Image 1 (cartoon, rainbow, N blue to C red):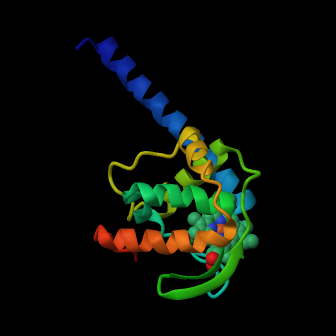
Image 2: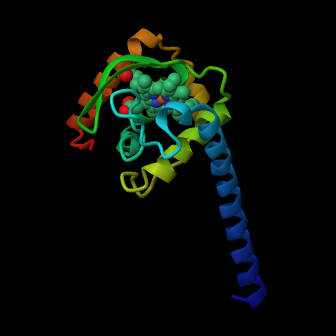
Length: 164
Ligand code: HEC
């Protein structure tokens, strides 16, 4: 391999990393502007009020249903009692239909890579606007999202995926 070729390869790789960084930097902004009020800027949530997203949702993406759930819960909202890290939360999250497909992809990638790195499978494929668009077409009513989450928990258990 020639030195010039080696160098251009390294530059190309750095460019790809920079592009990925940009996408997730966008996710950071979406998160701070729309989600941090409740889930807090470190995604730790507030005991009894808002569930943490840190070190909790990372394993959902191990099965396709979990990827679809994450897109759905952000897009369609959710209400009713859920348990996270052994704590109960009985709140309501509004639907985020106002966020573009790209922004939903970015914010999920940000929360997953930044705050769930320990749980994320090594071959994690980032969400794209196309995937978000496809799952958003399911158009699930907010009142049915809790059932979706319960079904997801059952599927994860059936796949022997432990959720912390
Ligand atoms: C007004 C407060 C509020 C805001 C703002 C908010 N959420 Fe939520 N979020 C909640 C509550 C409350 C729940 C749990 C709902 C329940 O108890 O059924 C939740 C649940 C979730 C879940 C499901 C967690 C799980 O373990 O299943 C995800 C993912 C999530 N929110 C992501 C986001 C993202 C991303 C944003 C920003 C675009 C956001 N939230 C903005 C209050 C909020």
